[in-house]
Length: 636
Image 1: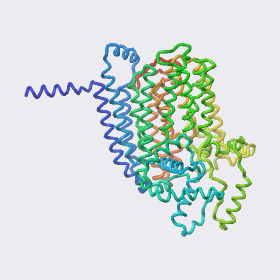
Image 2: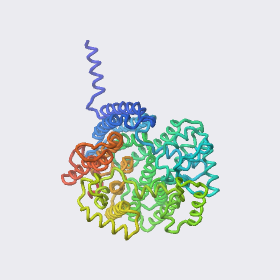
Image 3: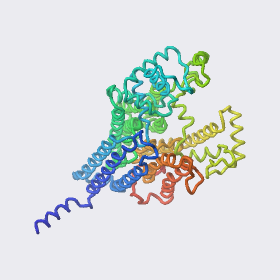
Image 4: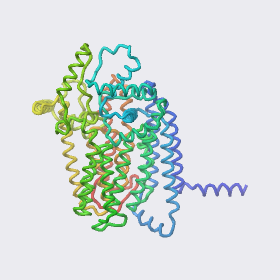
């Protein structure tokens, strides 16, 4: 009996819940179970399952539970005011074993979470099917910016069923004989791959060419090049997701590297490694943003290494090595812009810090960035109307009109709509997409006219109907826009752009006064965060752009909270499918409008309230407290 009691006491001592390592282990174990359950549940999100029958609320509850565990884990590693000094002291006496053990545990669980979720079926997301098609088209030596998926579907159907009569109503793009030959060749290749055909049939917005920039296209091609032609749809999906998860893992290691560069605790990397939003949007949904995030964080690492070599806060750090690192950072930033446009917002702060530290020689990397960005972005930009308006490309509209006329003559069917060419996906996205926004929505809805008693008026209107109608109509007539909705969107884009330009100017002033790498990285976070907040499309996976830099934010609690609140975005599908024609109590809105006009307020209000609270009352210990060795300017 005594021996048994002694053994039990020894085991309790070994697994003492007062130990941070043990608590982290239990939290990681609980998260593992939750992600395993989500992966098992994802089978009910197959495309063959009716949307209204999918267990969306159950999945969101599981992710909500994972987020609560994540917050508890964040508290465990939250830096205190004396962390840096304590870490340095412990390092001097060789007492870093516990911290090192915790880091390996953080990284290990982060990899495990993603390894589990990569086998799950994407929950309410189908973007990666477009990535797969783009990669396959690129590997066939055809530009994904040339043909729309709609054309490929029609061409593949013609190859497989040449005798079946075409539908009475059809959209056809006017193509030259050479383009038809290319399309026919591509259709014959796709028709022999059943898994790829299934992906093709799943793509949405098939009337537009690919909106994804060239560097992302390179990744798509690599991911699809290794897939056998006779592979199933699941194999194509897994290959793409595994590739994107690899970039996500590399980002996690780069975050650790950034923390080391700045002399901060590497345990804070848990904020990225364990983030449920990152795991959902990349390992489950397979969003390409992991590529651009990796490139952006790699740029940040190179920028810190070139401007502030570790331990060097002197006024000059110009050596051949740091100069080459600054050139490398310029090229990597250009590649990031070539993968997705948003890293462009980091360029002003980076350029100011570079020139401030290196003098006029710092202009060389900036010029390299401009040139490399033009090269990386040109393949997609040349397909936009902007390139045509600026006379950067030559477009023979008379030849296109002749093709349209010839197609009309050949079709001999008034129900067949002949168009010149498919519109560029990136252009349509930038001009019309609006989703899950708040700041942008408040502005745009207060300049957009509404019909009296049409049941779609937002509850937050503060402008009169007469003013909106008069203002919109006059602007449409003056600038020749297509309609009042297009004007409202364009006007709001202009207003939010002016706001962001003002913020960027303020960030540049602070960048000139930056005294450490922390200052620059905090400004990187502020630039990305406010660019995102002012955008019309606040997809939750876009917030991952800022997540690697949250560790440098002065008030990270609110931004970490945002990563969980954004999971409410998926309620959009619930209201769409369960209240398509019914009013959602206690409002007068049907499902889609209820999500558009109500849910974003619930989503963002706690975040803004917490930011205001911390701004007026200081960074009190809500989740923890942190004071980094950076400057005291309030940047968010």
